[in-house]
Length: 206
Image (tube, rainbow, N blue to C red):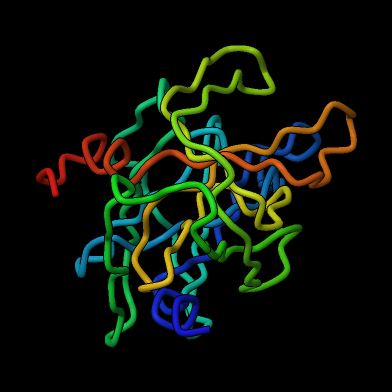
């Protein structure tokens, strides 16, 4: 419980909009995802596939306040994107970033995010394996060095934090494995390590 509570204030709900082909004056919701605030200035880390092709991004913070966000940088090969919100809540606290280097299979982990837009939702599980690779569902990217976990994650969880028992972010949820088109969770999730994500956003090594 402590792990989830310590990071929840840094987890944001993300809506991506694209131009509505039927109405050029309107935007159409294209996807929902999760992001995590990793710097006190409001810098947000999420998945590239959540924001790819979006015309507008709408962030909802833990206090319910909303703002648009712009894309600062992307690393497609790691399925990562860095966003900057236009405004941030006064008492916004960034998540504490940990290290994935100490993780071993069997370690307890928590996923926080917005599966199907519901949340913030918390699910718990364990590290199932390390240094996994996964081909993204669109077949474009082979993601390397991933953490495999079994905490429930579903569409909408993408971009959210994988958290250790100390409440530190050790990974960014990026994919779930499902051999059917249903995209529901069968017990295999993957996260990019926080070191990999940190290097993508130019954070110093830790």
